[in-house]
Length: 339
Image 1 (spheres, one colour):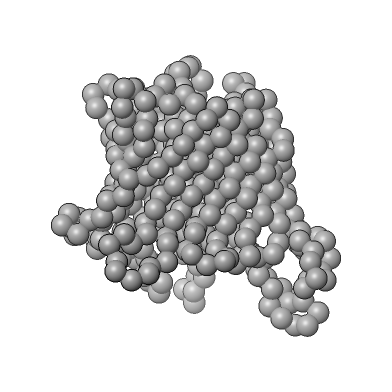
Image 2 (spheres, rainbow, N blue to C red):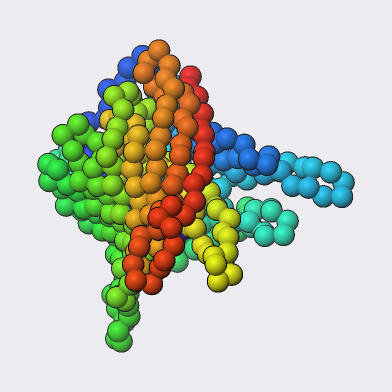
């Protein structure tokens, strides 16, 4: 499920601003979002800028503390890098490269990376889509294999209140039936330019396939620091996602129960910051529904500096499940830093 949602998070659509980047102001720029530390482990997302205050890189990091007979030792892993390229002094990037690292499970060393180039396409000043180029797995210090790269052009449809985005990886040239492989997501936008409803799914041809529905019911009136960034118009459907594993427990029949990951999101599209939203997943996922409540502290510029989050895992009752409504609760906290 995590890989499915991460891939969907890399499918940008045209926002209502389209080729008009968010005006630059004197408010500080976001440089990191850092989770609370639990047993020496935490996650962080870092933002880098050039002299024109344009985003040049976003890096997802994981910090871990491990115990051994010799004592505790810390390590850091760069999970994913995003690099943005610009023409001269233009505010919107023409290309993004995404490198997702793969690690040796035993040693934790980097084996290589999956590499994807995303070229943003425009016509008459309007964003019309993008071209995605996927390269074969690149080992450490190896060059990209340009001869075996695959290219896919995305499709989207936009109205004033809704956007749909489709990325079709289905095999087109096969002489026999091949199941579809289609990633799609859509957003319903409210009058305050915040997301009211989000759906994401991976159609593999079967009756049941991975899907997730997000419903947002409350936002604050403060500034969303992601919406301020110059890249926001091109990555409007994207979000900063921090996902955490949960430990299961046994039910009355002593069967192991999967609570699913905790997924916490902040979208580039939203003008304000979410305070309440829920997540419901498809038949192939956990039967639990996530109820998420967020509270913030702010700086003098009305930007969030600290966020406390309460997550309730609630059972969707049906004839096959007889659990209590509230299955389990979790707490998380995040710090936002600026420059």
